[in-house]
Length: 568
Image (cartoon, rainbow, N blue to C red; front, side):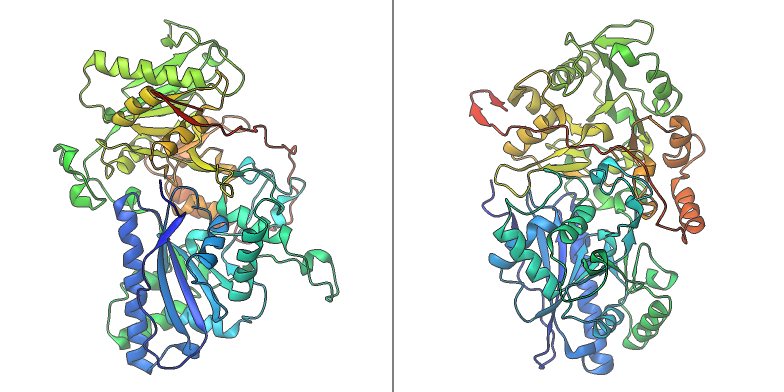
């Protein structure tokens, strides 16, 4: 296990300017898997370096005589949320210092289309404020993915689209890092769970910074709330799509075009779903990178779908699956507490429990391995564990998995965290979105993981066990634990959806057709774009109603390597 939550590459470059101006620190947070994502981080750093060189050739310096530092920061197990990485950023790496005037926070899928335009914007803003800037997202109704925050009216609260980039004043980020480092156990947090790092960061800042008592006005107006920046965009403008590796003269024209359109930085979709897989069906054993040359064509025939159900929902939910995504999932089995030959379902031998389902899930994994072996189905490379109220796009899932090596221990899903601020914190993939395992990993789980009780939370137990075994929880942005209405429009527009969960207050077959492609092709981006256009000027003051829920689960963290199993 690693001794530090992050390790950092050395400084990629410093500004060539000889002046001693204020620092602009550009952070690129970079997950290590899959490899093409890792490569995107270096591509962004290279683009920034090229833009800086062009600015210096064209005008002899950068706007504001800023000294630019760029770091690629590679996450390790627990600290994928920006909030909990901050203490390490200051105390262990010394990156954040008194001279740092601005911090530009990027992800692997952030594109800086105009570094010069971005720096010019910073010159116009007050670096002495406790402020941060980004593309503001809003909830249309109270949602579980945001812990039902402001459930009486959630539509007023802005939170940043992290993939589009985020700008902090050094004053705010230093204060935030100190607060988290000194009071990790005592600061106000509304949940032990990390679900959406963006919303949780915005709410933490809002809750934990005391407003300036010397300023007049409503206390809400004195709180620190995300400032919407028009130069940070949710998607590419037409001008920003071209390569930045061009002559200084063309660079200056392109920068002007981008800034005329108001966009210096924007989000990009994940490559895995926009890149068509190769037609070759050669053995994937040599897959080592996310490069398309090494990807292996993957379809629903290569995935075994283990669908978790119970007798109560046989007639209600299974027909919906059969009318939607089942047509693309030839290797599907329904595992239940009761065998029903009319479907058919396979009995796990485990009585149904209201919550948790840990013993049932481990039984499903054991039975699935046995079924695959008995059928001698050599084409199966992956197992996906799915709830009976989950909707999927099987073709898109195949495209996602094409560039992963199924012969390794691969664990893919929608990543959540539990107590990430604490030493006993861990990551896990939430079950409702669907969890994908390579077959070697399924065998490892069956051999090494067990349940403390039959109704322990299955997805959390699996995540904790796998983290202890050194297996990464690899996130896939298109997998969703909740319904389409639980996510901001811009997020659904950025990446093609892979799954949605829950049939309540929805029309599942319409959701499947609209957001997951259905039988009419990939319609979700088109509809998201229409939604964004039609609702661009929505009043975010609309009333949303929902009951307020507290976290239903308090999981004791107990772990011991005990012989064959890790007893959790």
